Length: 154
Image (cartoon, rainbow, N blue to C red):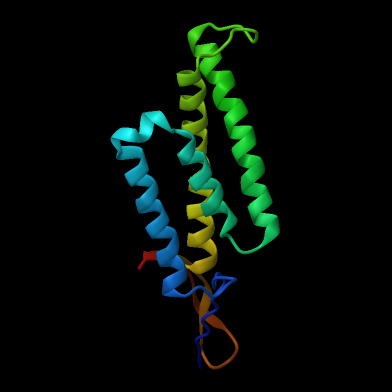
């Protein structure tokens, strides 16, 4: 007797349409355009505002708040590391260009969490874990047991 059961353990928890995913990718492309534009140095705060807008599109207040908090802590950590790398004291006044660099870097780093959310809950890539396959001898004894794991990206 052969018992074949497949258990899907990681079905995306939310159903996302292609249009919804496309919205995020379109906004990422626009953000890249802002970063590449010659006017970027005049208004670097635009990266921060675009990122906050992208974060605001995430369904679920809890996840949005988590990423907003991450953005704040990432900014503080980035500034701390920036000061340490340059030997600045906590009272040293950063230039506007340095402040902009810290804000932009931490904002872009935080956007990785948005990508993770999209991937996990909308399901761009899937990690499937399959429990086991038992092959019995018809007398209730297991001849073979296998654990299988694979990952695909669509």
